Amino acid sequence: MKYRKIEKNGDELSILGYGCMRYPTKNGFIDYKRTEKQIMTAIDKGVNYFDTAYLYPGSEETLGKILKNNNVREKVKIADKMPALTARNREKMDEIFEKQLERLKTDYIDYYMIHNLIKFEDWERLKKNGILGFVEEEKKKGRIINFGFSFHGNLHNFKKIIDGYDWEFTLIQYNYIDENYQAGTEGLEYASSKNVGVIIMEPLRGGMLVDKLPKDGKKQIENFNIKRSPGEWALRWVWNHPDVKVVLSGMNKEEHIEENIKAASDALPNSLSNPEKEMLEKVKEEFKSKIKIECTNCAYCMPCPHGVDIPTCFSSYNDKSIFGGFKPLAMYVFATGDKSGAFKCTGCGACEKKCPQEIAIVEELKNVSKSLDHWYFRIIGKIVKSVMYR
Image 1 (cartoon, rainbow, N blue to C red):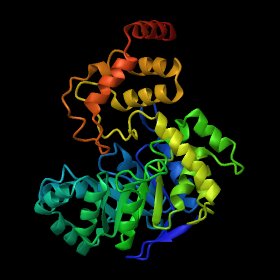
Image 2 (cartoon, rainbow, N blue to C red; image 1 turned 90 degrees about the horizontal axis):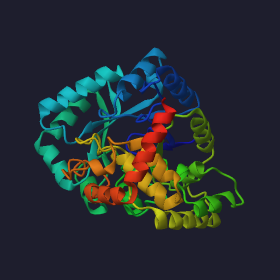
Image 3 (cartoon, rainbow, N blue to C red; image 1 turned 60 degrees about the vertical axis):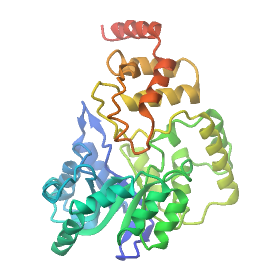
Image 4 (cartoon, rainbow, N blue to C red; image 1 turned 30 degrees about the vertical axis):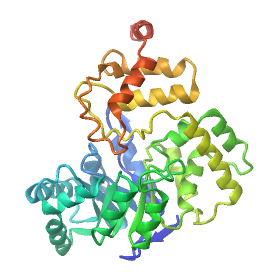
């Protein structure tokens, strides 16, 4: 495992971080035994940065239980988040933080951050609500070690927020498709120039750079003289940037953990050759030409008050554009049925307020419905389901 140093505190963090948003499940619940085995394997192989959040159902409790039961709390750095919209006042901040410590079964959090800052005004509002007093007090108590923020806005706001406080670290979305999206490369380099440690999320763009590459993009990778999986190429592209400290991966399959750890054992900054970068640029161009909606499947828009399964709707719509054919439409009908399809959208807009990608969700759901919600396919879908579950 390779490590990179956070300049402000000297921490040596594993370049591969463990994203705790999507643990493996069994019968609709977190599969504790499997999750425990996966996390302990990662720790044994050198992963020492674990990222969770107050809003990830069951995530904090599961991570805390595993670390305590295996007596490995001191071997790792826990990163956790306070939701920006919920931190309405000092009393609420204290309440959330105490709950997080309880769930994590720990006395302190190594890397604590405001979850999902988008605009500079969000940071100004939080300061008025008492966030600075809260952080300063908890730092004095030793219960918050480092303070940062996760970000999903534009470059202009990112720079203003970076300049608005003496941050230890930040968490941004970054991958070879989104090089100039949100904070992007310029934001990455700007934060680093201010001595702020940069952690990366969405290196695989919600799995799209593994499972949803267009056919010609896959061929570019398969025909290249160096043989690596699409996921490994995506991770190595991010690790190639020396300003990146940690890359988070939502690893919930054993083979992914093994592959990612192996790649993290020899991934060095500035190690990709020009031909390698040119190949990935061609994959990027092909991907960008096919994608319809810039959704990363983070599901922050959920739940929809009217039952629409927004991530599935968008994923199916992109699948149809990327792959074509009958399968994406059939999968959409099967997945959404009569209860969660795009046609159920009433245009209330509750989802758009929560979307970190600032997608015009209501308008896009109209496009999804126009493309995929055909009455005759829904009838076929009902027939197929009745046969399958007879």
